[in-house]
Image (spheres, rainbow, N blue to C red):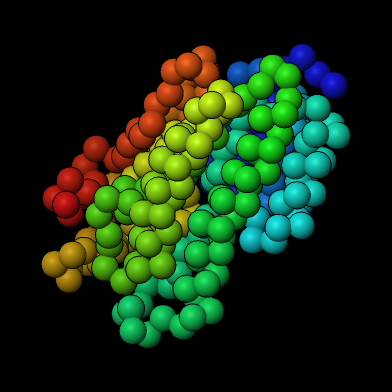
Length: 250
């Protein structure tokens, strides 16, 4: 048991998840990091200045029993949950919509959407029953929730759906002091966006380089949202590279 606030970060082994987990520990949280790659999770823990405040739980967010185990481990270790960051997500290979296999589609949907739902469901159970009641859920969205890229049907569809999940979570959580918001991210510099600097297909068919920005700015947004009292909520916030072509995609 600890007097620190408690957070779960899915996809905590790299990129935005890693940066966010480390930032939360620096801010005074005990953080449970979840992901499928135990080695990457261990690397995140090793990078922490206070590694005793990070608990590693190997988790497959597409598997309900695995997700339930994650929340059971959190409850056993800390007795409560103040923040869930639904960050785990993947994309599919860039290809024509008609060439996508059902397996490729399902893999993205199961990770990005179903995984977020399963974690939200378990968070609700904890947050509704704990004392003091309530907590905050923050979903990793994308500018793709508003405007797609070419050849990105699975990823774009899930990010549109995450917006619906965010709104429904906000509404259903009101009576239980559960707040929910979404960070829509555009070109944070991670392994997922490495191709941006080399060049990526645009809506006009051209391949062009796109600017990226440091993931620490996403962590800053997360900390701001997480630091608000539960009677205040940032419903949606967009953090993006200033010169990315998103505005012209709409």
